[in-house]
Image 1 (tube, rainbow, N blue to C red):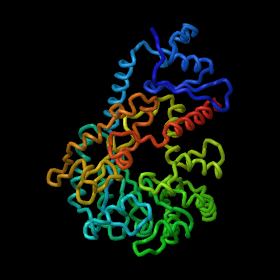
Image 2 (tube, helix red, strand yellow):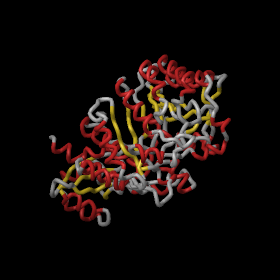
Image 3 (cartoon, rainbow, N blue to C red):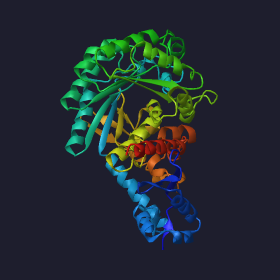
Image 4 (cartoon, one colour):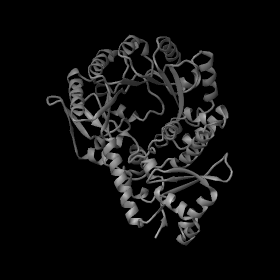
Amino acid sequence: MYRVSKYNIYLKMKKTPGKSLLIQGNRGSFDSVDDSIAEILEKGEKDSSVLDSISSENVEILSKRGYITELSEEEEYEFVKKVSHTLNNISRKNISITIMPTYNCNFRCEYCFEQNLLSKGNEWLSGKMTTELVDAIFEQLKKYKNNGLKVGSVYLFGGEPLLRTNKDIVAYICERCQEQEIPISCISNGYDLDEYIDLINKYKFQSIQITVDGIKEEHDKRRFLVGGQGSYDKIKANISLALENGINIVLRTNVNKKNTQAIQALLDEYKKEGWIGKENFHYYFKATLRCYEKMENSLSDVELMGQLVEYFGEDESRFQFNSIYKGLAERINYMFQNNSFAPMRSGYCGANTGMYTVDPYGDIYPCWDVLAQEECRIGKVDIEKGEFILNDTHKDWKERTVDRIDDCKKCKYMLFCGGGCSAQAIVMNNDMNKVFCDDFERIFDEVVVEVCEKFLEAQ
């Protein structure tokens, strides 16, 4: 006896009257169908007898695609759990490492999520990673590789990783990356970038991400030096220098209600400087994390997309200018273009799988949002053994699969969302194992319909 799956997602096509997009939340099926089929399935969730009106041919297809099932609700959920755990096991075989040369930073940005670290004092902030610690990190990476895991990348983060006083240790990290053929990227404020041009080119950094929050007046109010001086002019000059040297630059703009008007001015500035159109220049906008903002200043990514529509129009290409939309659009588009598996996941990001962040003191954290929070420390680098010694908290983070989050268990989107950001769940709910949806359902619906319709138009 068939019943309708509890994990079906029904979306109306915008440009194709009479057509709906069916998505199966635990099988990963995506299908364009007549509205009548979608309507029968929706009704069938409450009254399975309506399935009798579906032809035997369509029943067979809908069953194979997972939209109807002979499994009980309990059996179907057991299947979801197996999928979730399998995805987790696969994802944890892909390792990425974030290395923090120092917690020190020459900026005091008004919205920085690391502001709590200032209370630890200048001596602690100024501590710098040693070559012995770097060697131990790369010894562990070698062990990961020998055990069949894939080490995908190393990211430099801070504090500010590219402080001029860090160049010796950054160069040493780069040497070790080169030895093991591991790609390297960096997230920097860009102020001392001119000191690193030669090193970045020598070790072929994949990209440098820099934050610019508006043109001079607006940026300097939000991202200023420790002494209060503005940073815009120096950063802009460094960006031009880096682009001239062939370095891949990604500009991020953090947006809240205080600087939405900066978007157009920035785009005009990028054009004026001749950056737009360069193959090594990219930019995007991101709403600042609401959990670190005053409510009166906070802006959601959905609200931000509403702002971006004013500049880029309704075309699907607008997604590339908002990181949340862009990541999802790229994964969905890849699935269609390559006829591959759906972009399903058991956890929200690498914090729940194979990402590790090592601070200058050898403490290991699941991600940079929880740095120096003792309760979130997942291990310690053993310098003598050259390995990561992981604790019980490591298991809490890496096994935070969506099926273990009570609020997610009956959600149709659970294996696409992954339960939301663990760090933000801690801030907002005081519990990592609570859900933090952050408008995912709305963003998913908007993105998949537009990407799907564009793909179908091209066929």
